[in-house]
Image (cartoon, rainbow, N blue to C red; front, side):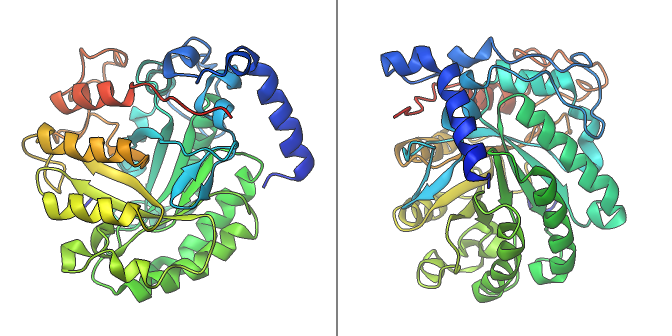
Length: 377
């Protein structure tokens, strides 16, 4: 936001276990929807409102009824994100705010609500590098990311590990830190099938070639440890495919990152980013794999009024092209883009339902809850 592999044997065993837990769906050939998996996600062991601590994990759900249980290891196929059956899927979910400010909002209760009431497929964990984030205490913020990955895993959600570089806009400035961070994350979670790595949140003020060079240095670090996880690469001009600085998607299409199983990220804020951005997203998604890892219904700062009509145009396009998306943000920050009303966290919720949601929260929750229709074969 601006201004502000598994070993072959392990994979086989995991697939067999998933197939056993999903037998009713497999027998009918029917897709497993959000509703089918809701009841099976267990609450965190410490209770619904316990703050997160390192290595805290919820009671494992019946994974066959969750997004990860149904879809397993994701991979890029053509221009789409595909599940373990090779079928295109669309993930929908929420991003945390910066964990240096809002980690206390991420409790067992709020994450239970995200998984079971919102029925989200994916949680994006935003680890800011600057602005009081990772660089101030690498161990603390790495441990916090570990904890949130475990929490999402226990609830059967996918998790995007977001290296939230923002200012400075050149990702090379933080390359050494990024290598250390992603090495630690990949070493801890390489046995999981639900982790995606977002290696540069919103590059700005630099060329696409410079961003590509960064990606081609950080991706091998991750792949040397976790060879199967999809990697998400930020694009120029705050992940707008260059539109915010006068460019377009052609620069990426013509000069793609030399790596497989990657997607390119696109961010938009509907009240600021109008038809030119929408058309760019549409064209790009027909030519390269795209994941919208951040968007809002407000202006580019996540503030001001909500443009739900323009936002719906984007969501309709993303549904038609199976572009996965994550909304900004799952907190009670005072800005209109934070979904909970101020004070919700201090009151320990309620997290489920709509009583503590802002208008943007009510609107986005309804759309996250829509039927998945995940293909199961």
